[in-house]
Image 1 (cartoon, rainbow, N blue to C red):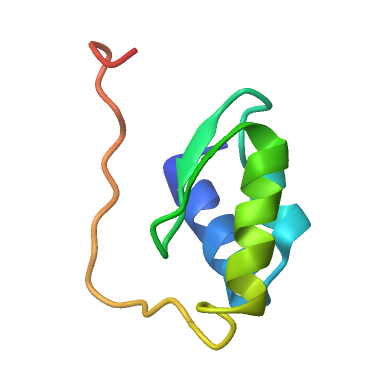
Image 2: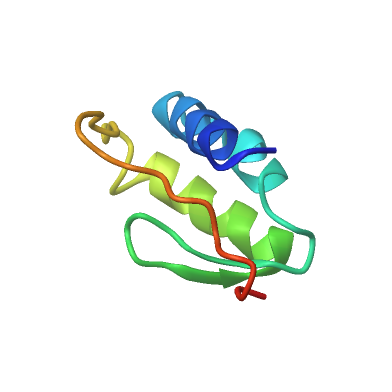
Length: 78
């Protein structure tokens, strides 16, 4: 998946509060800092964090698109 595909899928899932879709974007052992500031390690914690946000603070939040730039990670990045 390209960076642009990831960003598009994330924005689409976030926009409709698709918790399963957001979690599916994560590596099974990955970690995430959610848009509202929750830290989660692994898919189970991420699912709980995204669900909390979808039901609470971020329930009416929408991502704003506009000027931006996606850069591919360099070969030195691990």
